[in-house]
Image (cartoon, rainbow, N blue to C red):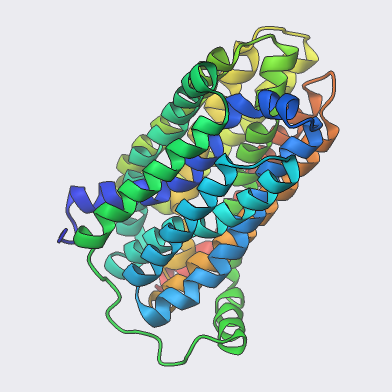
Length: 400
């Protein structure tokens, strides 16, 4: 059994948190091929991403209260079982409609990993210490969006798109085999009330009435929206408009994702010295700068893939600084409702990301403008929110 505070437990929590980006990013190089082989349009294939995000959002709403009542470990194992079954359904899909439905179910299972990883962190830590742990988890988990599209590009080139989903089935089975014997149960006091729609709404009302929570929720949601604008649009823009092969796209996507790894690594050191708020501010400035640089690249008519990838790397570095601190700040006031606080944050964050991604997918055509404009809008919105809510968040920090 892994002990709290050990690096091995941090790595396991990071692996659980990485289920989301792994499942999203590994099949990105396959999107144009899926469209061709299943006879689907770009907008229909993009719905496999949006369906996953909406399923992920709904799953998080369910898992929080269930985990507060029944414990982290049994709920996590049930979620992983659903994830493996749905991943197999994705691999065997014979139409785009079947794939969209299977992706939604896959997300319902995959959502358990990130909700319960965050709740376990809040069970064990609070404040800046929780921010540091979430940043460390983010730094380890950042390997997923770096490696996943590279592996996806190799699988797509060698074996076709179905092989990606068979690989995800195997990953889920390995994860469950590790969690079963090694994951400790960290919930000290289980919720007294049985799980029902009424008790779930009560928990979420308590969380949502906290103004500081809503401020951190806004920061997490706007910053995350830019990432999913990139995820939804980059495969088509870089392959269809900029002429990259599936493997070259995987490399380009990985280069951008290195920015996220750098941001989380820097944040893990910075937050203990400078605190949550300053780390958030530096990250928000990087988000805005990256988005505006991408707009400038498109406005100037630059045709190199690097003109989009490098600004996105800066955006993702900012995301690596903002997201863990926003999550830690949001969950700190709710030690007794950590599952609910994590679930509501994930639901709103993923729903906003799905909406942003769907809009970008619908607007994509012969230009990168929809992608660049969405990334810039989300980065600037995050910086504006950080400036406007500083006083409110500072008052909440004093109270806790």
